[in-house]
Structure formats: C-alpha cells, structure tokens
Length: 96
Figure 1: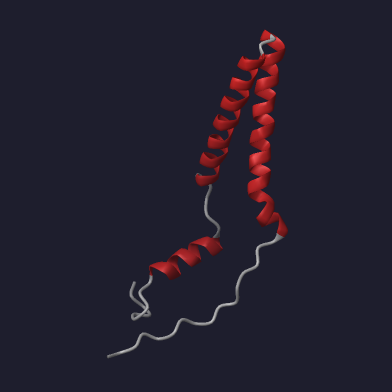
Figure 2: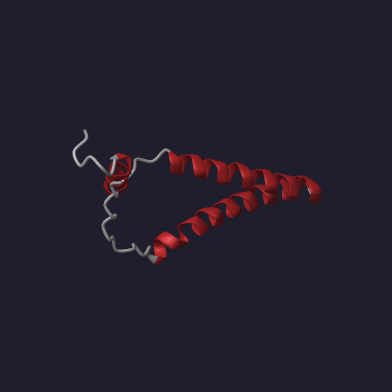
C-alpha cells in the first residue's frame, strides 16, 4: 500500500480582535435598525404590540440584508489562494 504524504505543517492563524468582533458589530447594527423601526412605529401609533412586531421585522430584514451584502463581496486574495489549495488533489502537484 502506498501512503499519502503527510500534510505540511502550517502555522495556525490567530484572528485579530477586529476579525473576532465583526459578527457582533453586524448583529449590533441590525439591532439598532430594528429598534429604530420599532420606535418609529411605537411613537407614531402608540401601540406597544405593533411597535414590538415592527422591531422584530426590522431586525430580521436588516440582518438578512447585511448577510446578503456580506456574501456578495469580492473575496480577498488570501481567500482565493486558500480555495485554490483546497481544490488541488494531494497526489498531483501540478494538475491544472
């Protein structure tokens, strides 16, 4: 039997504090938009239940829009290189 070569030792990448807090920033932005929508409806209609419903709807719509905009962005060069490494078979070094 032939054994596949061991993968090269790679240093683990430690994300920066900014990278770790990015999802919380996006969720916080969505919360602020939802609260704004809820407050506008609450102050306009003076109905607490309707304000809470629009707060929830505003939060859900804004978090979906933030996610869609994030998915539509152009990947960085590091991300493209990592994808290329994942698509290459281990036993053929120059398969393209």
